[in-house]
Amino acid sequence: MTTSEATPGRQWPSAPRSIAFMVASFPLRLVQFVLIVVLGAVGVATTVIWVGIPLLLCATSLTRGFGDLERRWVRSTLRVELPEVERLPTEGPWLRRWFTRLTDPTTWRDLGYLMLAFPIGVVEFAVGLVGIVLLPIAIWVTPGIGYLHGRLAVALLGPPKAKRLEARASRLQASRARGVDAAEAERRRIERDLHDGAQQRLLSVAMNLGRAKTKVDSDPEALRALIAEAHSDAKLAVSELRDLARGIYPAVLADRGLDAALSAQAAKSPIHVDVEVDVDPRPPAAVETTAYFIVGETLANVAKHSGATAAAVKVWRAEDTVVVEVTDNGRGGAQMRPGGGLAGLADRAATIDGVISVVSPPGGPTVIRADLPCSW
Image (tube, rainbow, N blue to C red; front, side, top):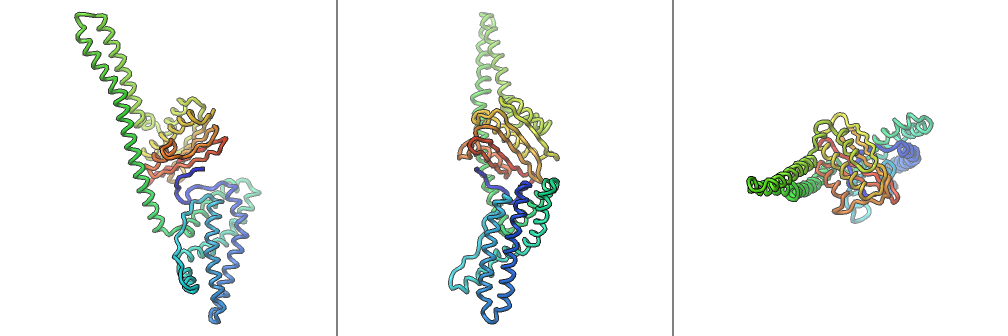
């Protein structure tokens, strides 16, 4: 699986993952809570006789270790993107190292999460057990609880808000740079298509009409042939200009929206493509355009390289994000390589701070997903 950088905590986990997380987390939460509370309470009570210092040192180390364990657990089960945290560097004698760890804001954020996780985990454990028995709860309730837990993990186990905003600014700067490169490549493509296509056709029309002028009185048969050739070239030029304009911004997308535009793309595909679109309210034009071209380029790649006989396009709205997912039953093995077609899709998505993820095991199926934010 090759995945571009994603926005932390945005995707909803599946019901099975959420239930597994809720049930399996409870014993871990219980052990963490008991150890930290007991060591912390006894350590504070016995500090005056120095016995508490090693206990508090142990409690601090366990808090940090459990915090790191929770980050890995949340990443692997709920599939939440949790950036790595930065801890204060520890050096010098053991007492100074402990004091540094004790005053590190990340340690206290870990402690806050662990103290909240136990009472929340009791509720989640109960809901997880009920969800195993009652299917509606498993389908509709547990993914939402898993999502909310993921947001809590991002808030407390991830970097502070200022760090997250700084990382987002850096990501936006990088995506804008990629967007500029993609726009420049698109401009060069349009110039090349104009030069090699419509411009040459129109030049041929002008030359044939010029030759025809010399044949008006002397050679009517040659005149008719030249006019017919000029007429044919003019029609080809109009067709090429129409295709070029459609490649810049298709009229059907502006007039009728994504559903009609993607259905028109699917109808032109040499393989069977199912289309399902639900994006109400209608997203901004930039998001629609990006989704349209991502689907178009993906379907073209599927038809050329995957060996697939069928594909499916699903587009839906999740809060302030439009999700585009293209699945095919081809041979799989697709990877995002620098300069490749999938990297081009990622560059196009990056122009609006979107991200592309690819899941394509050998033997298929291949799933290409784009998460396109509707607000910046």
